[in-house]
Amino acid sequence: MAKLWQKANQTTDAKIEKFTIGNDPIYDLQLARYDVLGSLAHITMLAEVGLLKKEELSPLCQELKVILASIEAGEFEIESGMEDVHSQIEYLLTKKLGDLGKKIHAGRSRNDQVLVDLKLFMRAEIQEIAEAVEKLFNLLLIKSEAHKKDLLPGYTHLQIAMPSSFGLWFGAYAESFVEDVELLEAAFRLANKNPLGSGAGYGSSFPLDRQLTTDLLGFESPHVNVVNAQLSRGKTEFYLLTAISQIASTLSKLAMDVCLYNSQNFGFIELPDSLTTGSSIMPHKKNPDVAELLRGKANKLKALPNQLHLLTSNLPSGYHREFQLTKELLMPAIEEIIDGLEITHYLVEHMKVKSDLLNHDKYDLLFSVEEVNRLVVQGIPFREAYQQVGKMIEEKQFDGSQRNLNHTHLGSIGNLGLDQIQAQKDVAYQRFGFEKVNQAIARLIAS
Image 1 (cartoon, rainbow, N blue to C red):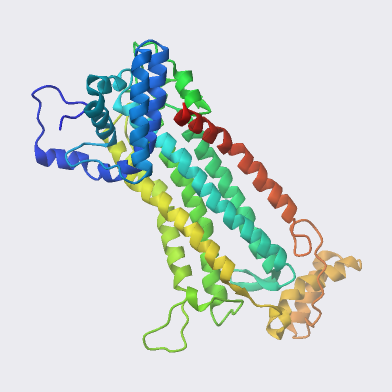
Image 2 (cartoon, helix red, strand yellow):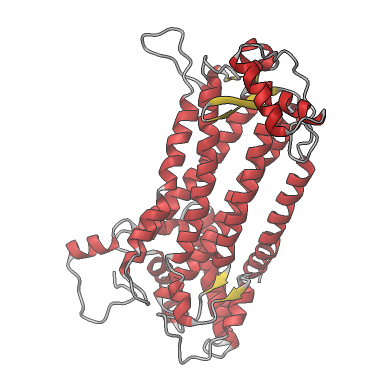
């Protein structure tokens, strides 16, 4: 089949064609919906500026919506010998409408076409990631409130340090995910810019209305400079993979805590049988495989921004074929982070927290700082109080049987600040503006 770029009587060696196309058709299936949406906006604009007759617009829109329906029904495919999703959709239009189908490419290049597909794709996937994070966040906040009185040893250098609580532990991860979402929102801002009209990267002599396609697709703004629109290829993916890697970093740390806390030497939590596996020779084993695999998969995701950075290093401005390979890093990563968030939700939901952990005398020294602070309140200078308690510990005279805690400041055991963490999350999610985007897309499809 002829390619969009192919001239008359031009042929390509089959081996070279296979190498250059690579796995693109596989990943392009995920872009099919967005290619149709971009085409709907583009031809609507072409009709407004007089590059497409009004009577030509209706059959093109109608047929594009037929293709969209087949995509959403899971029936769309990129046929063998077809180079990419753009070629497949234009082929279907031309097959149905003849030469009219060929008119949709006026005023755009595959460069800005794939760019808008990727921007729309990433924008939608960011919403899915954000929703998965929010679901986990909500559960962590519920768990934090439910277990605010269940004390837990706090560690520094893996040595017992000071009293903590499961309320603090769950709440810490909830707030950490809010901070990760703030990074995700930065990726969304970049994905929410319209590249259509940049063409191959240098604009067009056609009187294109770039603001119209921006509005139709619900973008926040266009990439103003057409060269910069092309510079965003790879950069937008890097922003998103950086946000994904940070969410993965939080998941990895949580998973590591679970592996430690579930072990017999710690014994802070208990995982149900559904989240563990046994040993082929040791009948007592209940291994936290889910948490271990979550940790491993999250650690793999943390490497992706560097891989993308290396892939796109030393490239001058303009389009380069290496950008095609960014899909192979980006698309599986999105699936894996959403899967990881869902598995973590299941893990947190079903773990059993053990209470009264600090009653054992091995945790007496956890309360040494409490004794120092008690002396300070009595008027003894802090450094002197520290020396007194330190001497008692050295001489085995420290009495850590007093387990009374009086932590009242914001973010401490006795004042978790969950309302403030919830408010931070609400502000972060309001900044995305998902509703505005979704309404624009719904109007475009319905028009």
